[in-house]
Length: 390
Image (cartoon, rainbow, N blue to C red; front, side):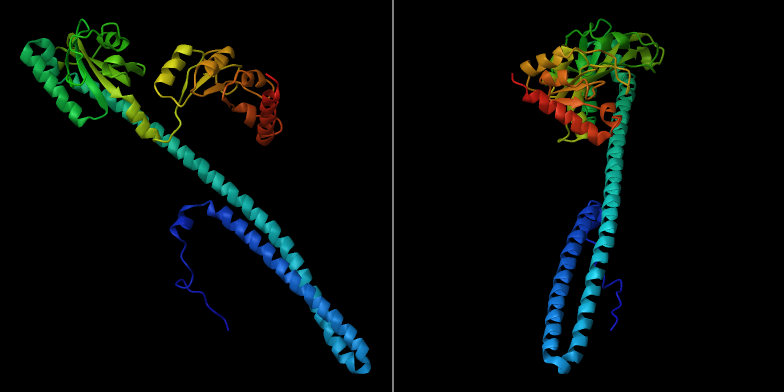
């Protein structure tokens, strides 16, 4: 009887099977295991059949003339058993080769999908960051033309300052990515802010900050200034990216500069929201102990130093001394990473400093014997260094 498989009789793939391409590899492994087990069972059965056929031939010989017919049957049974054993051997050989090929293809597909997924995630994160930061430049230039902000500097009396502060508070209520907004006069004094109760900065001078000086020197209302991310003591020592634009008379693009609007982007919270709560976030500190200490205090998961050697991957901006790795390892608990031109041949002195990680690119992918051999060689060198007596 022939059984026809219809669409309704074939089980639909589960959500897990549909969404997890790595099931290809696990299912292929299961097929291999099942194949080996079943072929072993077939061989066991044929082995017993051969023994039975052999016994039958012996008994038929003992029976003499009357057992000749039975001997023919026993011979045929042995022949069938041999054929089955041969088929099983061929089946194992052919299926093994095909299953191995299927596993290789499956791994290739999974690796390609995983790699593409990582590329997509990285591009998406870059796009989010780029769009997020670009929007900040739009915000500061727009708000610098707000009438309440301009009036606060045009006629800086009590009511104008109070209204401007209230206006900034309304903006902050809608734009939650900012810690605070500051209106600064031409001398660099903060005369109004959006969260005076939380951050009492009124009267504080920012005249020496780069963002204030750069914004004050802009040529038109289309320009803006931005500062490197840094911790700001007046904002509870939180990491901040400050954007600034000149406040101009009448809010006009080429009006006389009256002061500066500084908007303080909540870098820590927003960066973590983009990369995820479980992401490992490190900071490249080049050859600077100062940058590394700032990064460590800011909560970096690791700090990276380098380049230690000439690199073919990119032109390194600095040349670092391995001693900085030793200093960091002895003084700090945040892990360190050595980066830049590292190869199997030159990595030992870096490992000896006590650094936690080696960041290697061309030293692995450009290795003469291939990346797997490179990784094995790196592991061997690291093991040899750690095996040395103190």
